Image (spheres, rainbow, N blue to C red):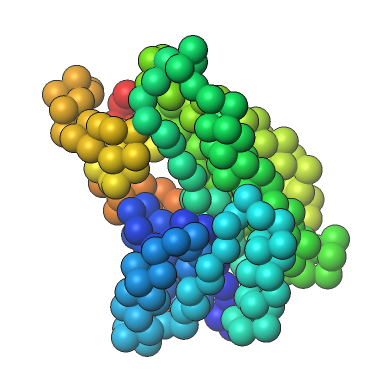
Length: 248
């Protein structure tokens, strides 16, 4: 029986790459987006054109009511949930901490941390054997920034991803006996649109020569790791923090 994977922030970059790859592996794909409906619809249409099942779902993951409505639509319109990829996340312009506002911190932690908590909570309700379901897999998107700290760029973003690392370790142990595996992928310098938000659109290319592999990674390379963690091939892997950072 076909089962569903929800990908938050699935309309572009790493999320879109994961969506396409999950569809190729036979999953029904719920593509969450917050603003770019046309990009989300493009991902969905590509999956459907290839014979897959997909649905675009607008929701701000930091808003509990919107998250609940999104999961209700999955329940009503897609096969049972088997996977969650907590990919939605934001950065802000590069700055020192003495230049940052409280509103900035609230936004970053609301989306990056609370959004992941909200979606994981609802996914556990729908996957845990404790609730009468068949199990599943959660993959959280962390970042190499969680262990590097991102000084003078975005220590707030790095701290939010440090919280995701801890959340991953704790939740993995909490639901390990309930058929749910929880892991995180920590990308390094990846060539996606996220760098434009920080005011450094060329960051992936400008830093390439400083990386051990001397190139930026691609969204597809990160997606491969995420989809492996979702799959039965990773059946004995939980509580892992997998760096996809080219040795950085």
